[in-house]
Image (cartoon, rainbow, N blue to C red):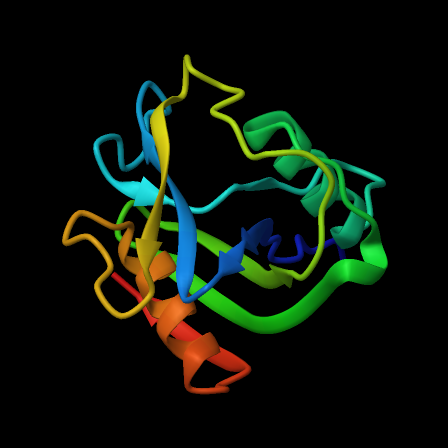
Length: 146
């Protein structure tokens, strides 16, 4: 008997935090949550490690370089979205990097901006807001249903 296993998509998110400020990007032309602030993030490619995917995404999106030993795991989220798709989201704090963050994907992002972590914008992607809040509360796992 042949059966099909359930498959999940995986995404990675990088939290860059300096002096109580967090770097966010305003999304555009992505088909999902355009006009909302997000983190440097993206999908994990086939045969790619979670660390390599995170480092690749931050380089592609904000033009900085970093090493995997500077990625600190802070949260994992099992996410169910209303459009019937499901993800496992991995959140990392990036402690150290080379270069100055820039908006390296202007076709997908209006701009990048530092926000006080205590006063995040109202138009932030909901699961990202939850991930940041859980990181700050030292909650390492959550389930998110929208």
